[in-house]
Image (cartoon, rainbow, N blue to C red; front, top):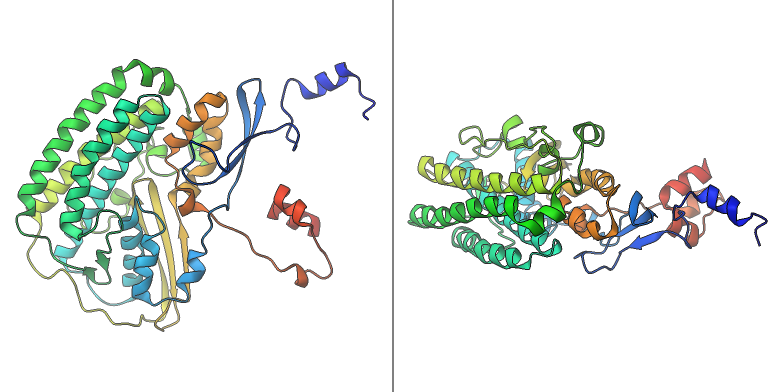
Length: 411
């Protein structure tokens, strides 16, 4: 038993739930608001969150290692499975990284088609996210409306690529097949409908009382914090920093069909709602413009089964933000190394800052506002205790403290 008096313990604790197995508040790894397992240790002062410690790795799938056992082409389909919502962003980032090693030019028509599909994916991803924010804010009508409207975009994607989710469309040297006949007219009609609905939703999210209470001032992030923690995508742009890979380092046909970078200075979930709807409207404009300006010609260049020796990196602006691929080839039919940095990995620490100062009831809304994809992000550290010169660490210690504890203890 402790010799401390009740008053001494009260002063030492200062009202905080202490970071210990007995006192901390767990959130996850299995929780109704988490569609993928992840674990957050919340330190509370009453209902107020004062510290957040994330623990990642619950859905690590070993995809980078698996890529070293598959051919270059098979890896296109593997990397698409990293994320169903932004599968095309993964495939074009990977294919363009490989294309950068090889002396083959992608036809102009294929570059335009890549832009069209990438922006359709951005629209459906943003609408999916908007519905989820509405759901966790207690506005299920918005969720049902938005997801119904999202079907129009998925129908267009299926018309173009043959698939709604994993499109299997981008390939080395271009895209797998040409656009269907009369797609321009159908896209114009469907996107016109989406523009009307997005304009309506933009007015709605700024006036509806439920969303106002649950999102205004909630999850606020300052520009100073953003510069320190380097989030990407809408999470960065909502602080007023207009960073966008499509503008700063154009790929596909973004040098000819240019985005209008949307920003906000409020830095809260409410500003993210408006910002993403502005991006939906801009993406609709870009798709229609690209389909009007698209040149004639082939959609794919010949590409060999093996890739030259070398290494390259490529990044794209996925719906959640910057997606980064590093590819290394030893000159064979399989990659020597593929390294992936997803937007959720870049945004996780910012999300922990967004949660500070909020209540437990705000956690689902704030985490959804971050737009996480934990399956995309998860990583594990692997080390061989047998080679540690007699040093050992218990499994209990590793589970509780992680790899950094191992490194500090070993010295």
